[in-house]
Image (cartoon, rainbow, N blue to C red; front, side, top):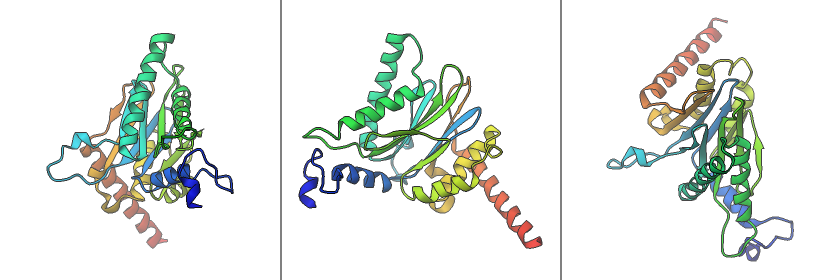
Length: 248
């Protein structure tokens, strides 16, 4: 099978593009990313790698604004993500210039997916080794959450995850996501952080990055103090649950 992975345009006998599978494996080895859509809020959260002692914290980013109403979080190769984010930001600006309106969330998700797909059908290139979660609000105030894969596919979700241990995070979201859990903005934020803590070792708030998009408001990035306070609150909730179980 090894000879079938030398070019991205060659299908293997079982109908697979091995270079695309390798890109998907790169995503699975990347740091975790989570997106949750509530009725009035969209929350994106990402796990950051541990910083070197002398490294500037502002240079290590997992979440990027594409426009004033659309945000992207990625899992996979950071260098690939930087190129993708740059192209998506330019596309958002071009759309506004040509159409004189804000880009829709589905449009920019489809653009990113299309760009990824182009890199699966040409020689001398390789697929993007990233999975992108794009969230935001359309002009009519409707929240949307999309995920794109290295193959060029994209889907809309209520809650999704990418990166290492994404199966465990998705299982957690399937068990805990409900209209009641995301009825409030605070509940949606807490659920996103709880999902990410399923894979973050040590519950270190310095490894988390969280963006909150509320209808009609600018993008808000939670600071370390706010993230730490929510993690502490989650810890208290778990202790209370244990006490209730013991009493029963």
